[in-house]
Length: 336
Length: 133
Image (cartoon, rainbow over all chains, first blue to last red; front, side):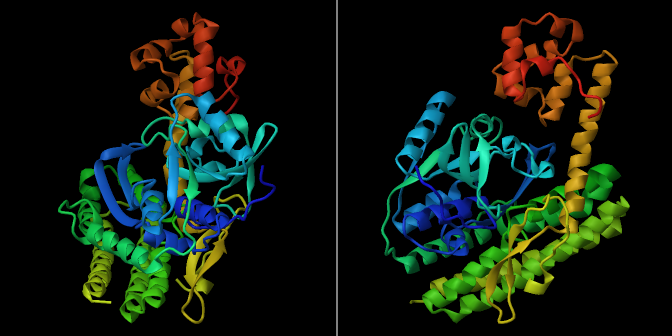
């Protein structure tokens, strides 16, 4: 069993967990780099999928997308396991810990007792690393926390086998083999390519930049279609997905800007540095949107004019992001 | 976001700090710990208010004898019948029947234990209610 684990305090659970696992195996990359290579950034507005009765909004890609893409692009062999039987799932975890193997896990946040109470929602896409067991406690490296935490075995079992949308089914993953000198340049390029195409080229108006525009359109219509309370709830939902724990600020936009800056140096493409600054500014606009939005919530307001001005702010975010990804797209067209 | 602008409002993080990305004086991105942001706290409160109202309403209904304590504990775990069905492996329709106080009172321990496991609580407390939600 490992005595300790090189914990990495990160903005996002999945990129953080993967980053820490890579580091444990000797590959030192920043969280932003892992996030970018795994094409973590996205935007998604799904009105027909409800979470707590509200439309699904996400500023990032599907859970597990980062580790799957990241592993592939970095030449890492990642073994993932899911379990039908919880006892089996817990025994397998113990066996791996006994052989000094830190293990990534997908969990449901609601059952993790070390989480602040107000953040414990039924959400099943949270990633943590287990690195040791002490009697009936597990020692976890949860990268969105500053330090490692202890979690009772019963609670962890419940979290690993939580139910509902994205049910983790006890998902475990660990690194089977790794190359310590991966081709970072092509990994970063592949990461950029996927994100550019997902942000700009999906022909559905609910995803990427078009998704932001669609959201702007419906935000403007909330005061007429919804009660005041419901309009406020919908708005709060958008802001929560953007700012609540695990985005690094502005719905992952700042973290992705950090990746772009790093990629600019790595690839020797100054244009990516510009894209980074532009995305940073777009992130600031997202923050402005959040500030304006909570003013309305606090006042319990649903004046159409107020929501319309929010919609304008979102359109501005969409316009800026479109420019960012077009800029990156142009860089990718360039021969190296 | 500039490093100086990283919010440090004591909010919902209960003293924990989360990692934010911000630019230092030279424009380089760094990871900066933040105690929280009042903006996110307001949005969080708005979301929780509805959940808490549902829990309080469920407690009220149980006290008034309209539904069984199961309804309260289900709401307390942010669940609806469908989610509880997924957790417990008991069909929704059956769960709905168990929401009737007189049916619930006659349930065997074997079935109650499944609910207790699904809700992450002891069997003994499944039939009881707290003083306040």
